[in-house]
Length: 395
Image: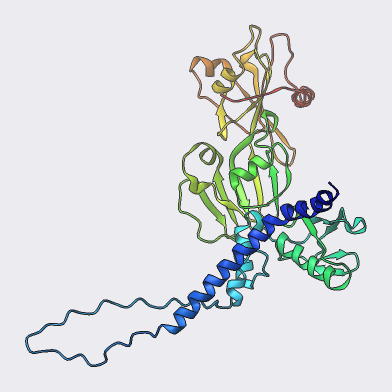
């Protein structure tokens, strides 16, 4: 029993190592077979083709089949222009311009005022810090100082930091970074939008998309007008000739808002570029005060003017005590000056007098039968009243 006990560990060792011996033996056998095949190939002499082909009279020779061309497996070095297509390679000037125009996905080029968050794995001192790109295109990085970032993609800047930190301070650093704030490509959106201000482009954006980023059009109190204007510092080139788009200046275009939003013509939805200024015009408002059923301010939807009959219809008619023969139109100029005009609204309603046009910011005031004659002080009171009026949509 003692002898068996001494042999037991050795037997277990053989059983444990047997798969490895088998694997090694199989690999050696395969290597020997390959070597044998190579030797046989070297011993076999290639058959030389007969250089002189004698042809008997009247005998035709069939054309020899085409010989396959040898494949050239030589790896050709990549030139600078090819290197710009490799992910993570530093782009050439032409490639950088193409990426700047595309601005899609990982091809986004970092620019001034962008904020970048940088992390180095297992190095707390170099992790979770933000670096904003300065106007000269550099960021300030611990241990390295100023590092050029503008014009690079995220992957290229990451590789640059890996290389710089690895060459001087760290062993095989693992750098990760992402753009926290995109601020290098601003677009100003002002006018009748829900959230006027700066919109920052992170990719290609059309005019409708930029308006959506600004919260869409404003509500009835500051409803959008008929036009949206786009100003471009460098001017416009190759604008489409389409109904609804007018170039009012070399650096400014006007687009009909209703056609832009509701027509199927995508040519109106032009691409917005960095530093463009998008202005949505504001719709005009006519104020109806006094003896109306529903007095208030009414938006001129897609109109520049309305008539007094349309105004009465907007306000759901007049009250029973309205003194229609003494109606007043109060017109205010942009300088703040006011002019008054008395109209006989009763005759207009009866068709005995021509209708009168109301423009943006006009006030149509109809006194009731108990009111005295309209004076300068009462006109001032009317102007003061409209500031607290509700604003309604148009017809």
